[in-house]
Image (cartoon, rainbow, N blue to C red; front, side, top):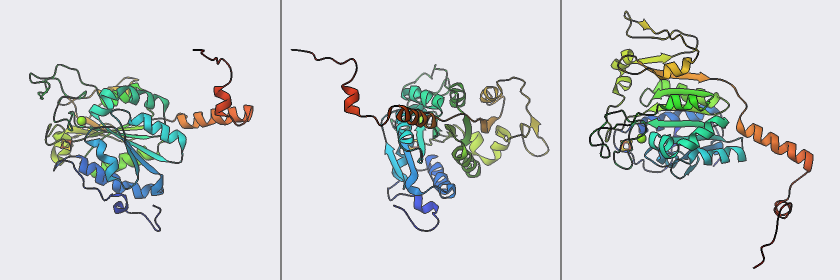
Length: 313
Ligand code: SF4
Ligand code: MG
């Protein structure tokens, strides 16, 4: 698998036919990830893409890296195991709003709070696409789908607030078709040590078209999105009509996560980035300390030791 010379975007494209619907936002996300990969300076054989179930979860097939298409909602658990087994690997989780926040919500929460050094990309199209258009945990109240013919009465999960509430050390939001911003967020997520969570607003033209049109369309984006930039004021709007937002609360990132259209622009960028020890570093530290104290272990001896007994027929 190793290749001589610098890697290119093409080196990260597999020979598999991409089977998303025409116009799906996933194409743009795939292309931008493939574009960023060669710049990270990681040998291609050290990349692993792990997914669950859903349209976005076809991702590992299209990356010319190692990958696992696992079971519904469980990608974070597989990724944790991979990273702990070999911390040298660059492990990326690809999930959707249904996969990650419904059946996989519990796994996502515990992976984030442990701060495993992973990049978790949650493609949010606010619908179940693969199963043909049911409402998802992020669907808006009132959204009519096959499973909510009279409109959804569920209050949606906000992925950014979920990640912040789970203790994520890096949280960002970006947009499928904003190539420059998406690439910048991917690079920042890679540079972060610990769980880096990115919500990617993604269009599903078949079952929930134009859900994010206000931030996907270049013209509307000027008014409808708020680019979060380190150390810079929160401003938005066209030149000549730039407005600012001031939020006076210690829970600054949460407050930003609560901004909604149409009253406010949608914040795009890094909400939080802090340092904490990673799970795999703490785990390998414990294993090394136990080895130093007790020597190499033996599984058979362990299983036969302590409180064991024989059940007679
Ligand atoms: Fe993309 Fe929607 Fe088609 Fe799935 S159903 S591939 S999300 S356009
Ligand atoms: Mg979805």
